[in-house]
Image (cartoon, rainbow, N blue to C red; front, side, top):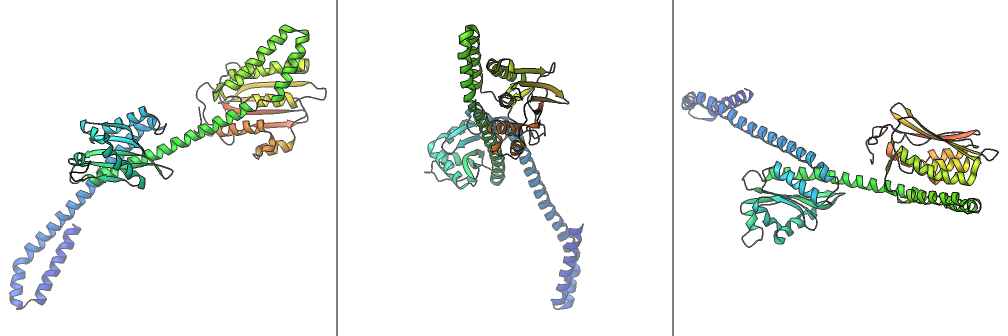
Length: 435
């Protein structure tokens, strides 16, 4: 109605101008009387139809864009399990290409790295894309980090057989501002669809690129955590081996059978420690490893080392591998009382939805300076304690590292992990966990 009235008002103004500038006035007036009403009405109606048509086009374009975005998000959601390994799994890339092909009306879908085809899916015409002459310009186009449409080629051009009835849309896959591949789609030619297909391919490639970067970050986190684990494994105290061998050699003189048992225990301990490559273990498996270590230490200290282990009945949880060993070793090494006796207690009990695992001794306590350095992230706290503290925080959140109570009457070190035998979950609900 507003457009109709504005157009009608403009036409009235036009009639007034005709009367003002036309001579003779009587002839102008007669003309205006004749044409005014039909011109005002028809032009106003025509403007309404014209603007309405444009409005319908814009609404349709918005609808198409929204539909394409829904389609792109749906494709990415289906493809997420296959993108977590990056571009390194041919089977996953094949699955991703098939998802895109089945979800869109394109004639062919191709995923490449910077050197060649990783996966391709389509009708009989897609074989044309495998030609080196056709593939080269597509791969070259991704180096400028911009999407490219191949829509026309002359007859001598290798692309001509493909572009005769189709267009090729190549969108680069980008990680850290560098091209790592391309998402290429071959679509049947329509006079009005090139830009729509380009936008769709670009947005889909951008979503894929984001997921590939996330998968790379996740892979780097896994490598970092594995490196931390290997660092812990490499920290098996050489003095412990030296003392264990000395103890066994001493036992050989009086009890050959006991010495043989200790040698087997030492062998089993180092095999468990050095060959284990699991990141998470059940609490009972971790305690079994620690028990092997304590068996050797008890042979060394004999009656001067007492160990109590209490695990709450039916408690079952997962813990990071090799997480208890450094704590128990510290308790044995530094937990001697004034008489030289060492009393180490290991306990695991339920605390709400969490499992509280603690190691306690009756030694002179940990110096306050060492504890302050530990919580400040300084290496002076000792490699073993510091590494355990950092691992716990990286898995369960910043607030869930080691907890320490220490006095001249002894030290208690403990930490919390989710109770239950399922996959570990972040105590802070960060969900950034390597399970």
